[in-house]
Length: 245
Ligand code: HEM
Image (cartoon, rainbow, N blue to C red; front, side, top):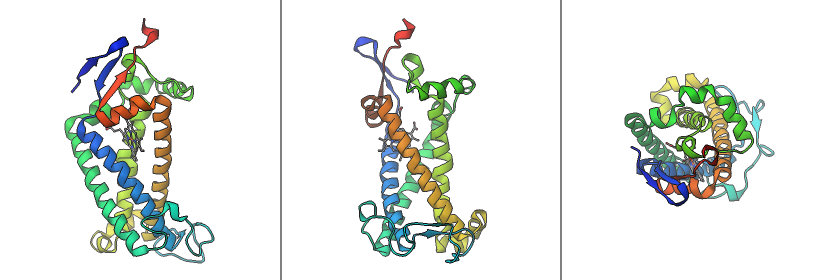
């Protein structure tokens, strides 16, 4: 669905994000933040990671802090600093919100054609990916007609996050649930053991934090007002490309 509104100065407002995309985007951002903070509190209970089925204390893969006692400070942990039971309750509540929300977005995106029309790069975009990387490194963002759609790097990153990292973090989390492990034991085998699933869960969360930092930096570099307006109201304002005239 494309509606355009002509604005002063040759600018055009394009309806870029339908309501369901905006709502699921913000529920996702909120639930991921709370999952991260409650997750660090859970990790504080035993701040070390292992590979395989069991945690061999003598052979950890990664140790945070001294490995003995909480490693992450109180300002980054929820709902308290050392309260494993409440931390797990918060984590599971927001995990289910995150899963239901992600599922809602995925069903919408797959059935509405959003994946095909908005997120899949075109052949021409793939062919010119080198130029796009170069333009990004120079912090030059598309204007005019080119800005109507996501650029190829945005599309590939969003696809990797939506259909790679987000399902991976949910599946590795489910693998650690004793109740689900009893019913879906193949998941533990896929990850190579419960401790491996825990490590994959942590690495995926760290990768998501890195994505988020780059995502926010890109919003700031591309124009925070236009970008935030689009993901809050749906309307994205395109400036005329002076090079076209
Ligand atoms: C404070 C946090 C965040 C801010 C300020 C933010 C901002 C934005 C903005 C401005 C857009 C629209 C970009 C455009 O139209 O050019 C967007 C889209 C998007 N964001 Fe975020 N975002 C945040 C958190 C997240 C998180 C945590 C994730 C996922 C892990 C995420 C994933 C996405 C995806 C996949 C899209 C594209 C959705 C679609 O078009 O269907 N964002 N975000």
